[in-house]
Length: 100
Image (cartoon, rainbow, N blue to C red; front, side, top):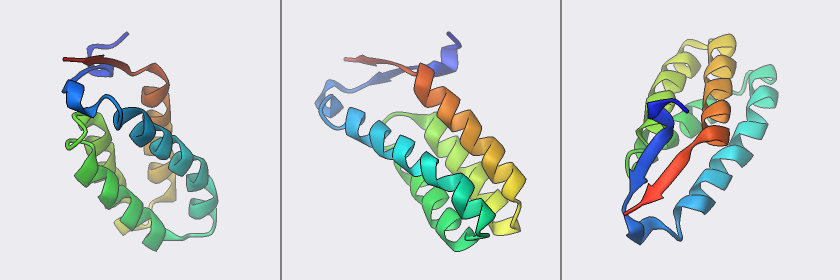
């Protein structure tokens, strides 16, 4: 597993993180349709939220993807949005969380 997929999260977040990750997975399921609909307003908001919340949950990769996806959504680049969504989806399937 890549080092980037290992995160250490404060034990106080143990009850919150699984729901946070489930929510990101649910949102990822909507992205292809939103790109096909050219709903970049939604994609800008969603990616902005990811950029802001990933670090808060000690998962900086989500913030990184959110920042890049926001740029792509602002540019109307659906292909880049889909590629970034794919990266995040793969990451969330392999993330290894340790609570301390």
